[in-house]
Image (cartoon, rainbow, N blue to C red; front, side):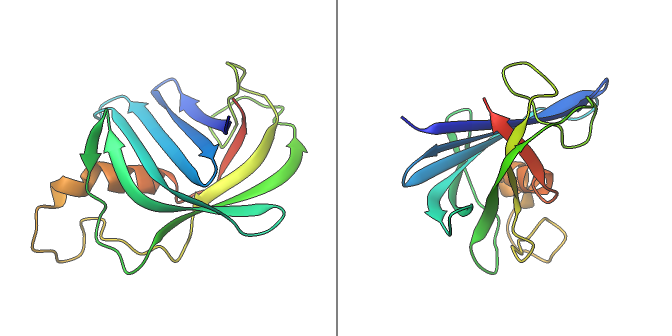
Length: 156
């Protein structure tokens, strides 16, 4: 049986949930965003889970899907890596919209892991010249953008 960690950001205009599932040697990360005036985003990034030390690991993104359908990964200069660092249980005493974890329905549950897209993960976000159809990887780009800032996750 694997491990599940979840994080939440939200306001009165919408919410984004991030859920990391680790089942060695694989992992998946679901980004589910639902914001007023924007189409719903539901992307699962999947790949190898690499333990890098006693408190750190990485998810090397190999594929993506949305509601069971495969999605294309945007062109990149190298691997898309999501870094994870374990931390001692930290309180999140104030509910709000900034990096607060959501665990079992409680907005202020403690968090035990921080994750983010590695800052050297360069990918075509649709602003570079590209001869293909940018929309074919738009959902994955939108999910990756949510991961550019750190997320605090707790047991879920």
